Image 1 (spheres, helix red, strand yellow):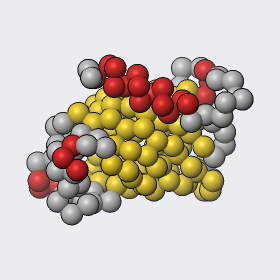
Image 2 (image 1 turned 60 degrees about the horizontal axis):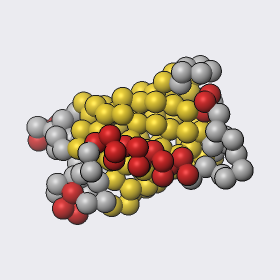
Image 3 (image 1 turned 30 degrees about the vertical axis):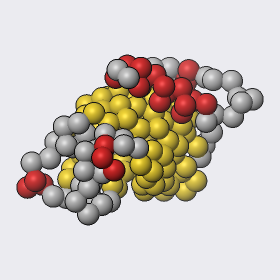
Image 4 (image 1 turned 135 degrees about the vertical axis):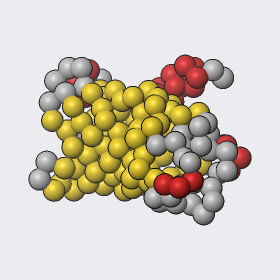
Length: 156
């Protein structure tokens, strides 16, 4: 499956997570251009800039659906699909977890899909937002990092 088809399938699955009775509103849709990962193992030659394309749809105050594709820290293409659950607030910052599935990491499950639950904090203001996730290391399969995802909403 080519990259665009993979992204479209992943985005479709994520948006299907939205309640069937809810109307999709363009003002709830965020777009991102991948991640920046500050790796804990900085000396391993990992890729910190992880460009890609992702979508996030805010279902309600606590839930968002997300999907995307990016170049991961091992210079391989990865896709993801999942949901944010952020029931706690600290001032303007939402706190919770993002859970879902990832693929494309050569040392993790032979590059296949695997589940993950990651702690995340989100700040959103107007058209701009930032997701910050703490990615734990998984032995020699995945490298731990503090990951930053800048996002943009076209309609406020």
